[in-house]
Length: 86
Image (tube, rainbow, N blue to C red; front, top):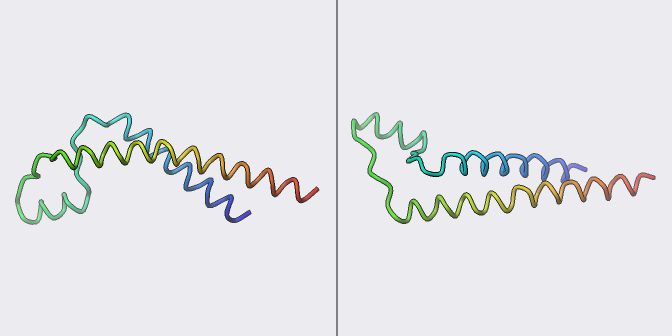
């Protein structure tokens, strides 16, 4: 039951991340940590390289696959658990 809850929460989080990343995939983004470091140093962020764009697409693809997969796995685990209770 605890594992099913974990998979449901993690699957919902990954699905939410994938939806947000699909919606904003054309925008250039930097992390909060990188923004804080650049602000402290007084520098401007570098433009994204080809590897940055590739990793962003990789992140979107894997979040889109594994988010619903974990949600389905959580649902299957809950159904299995409910079947054992009867």
